[in-house]
Image (cartoon, rainbow, N blue to C red):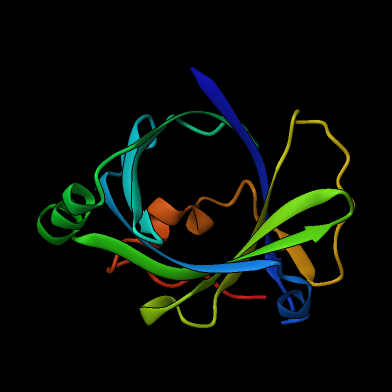
Length: 157
């Protein structure tokens, strides 16, 4: 079993775009949104993954991720995933770390969230200038919650 350790922040301006070294479109849907076993299908750049995540304990949670055939993922997204998200992800190096900045589309347009993966929950993080309020512990900003079309869109920065 592997652990995902990440902190999440709202983004307060678009200065990250000039810092980005990579950009890609992600489409993802949820087969299960139970906090104890969230199951996600994701596609990006002709590749696809199936991911299972456990319940968060602060910035830490269990995570298992497996590459799957892109055609299977597209079929699952079309048939099984009523809860979907489309976003553009920017890869932004800053402070010796790699930040992933997600610009959401569709009903979530205007929401921009930055995440940074860490080696330990107590790791020190130098915040880049575009980062605003931390939302690591706010379940409204979990992608599985954002995928719910009936949930209100949480406030942006």
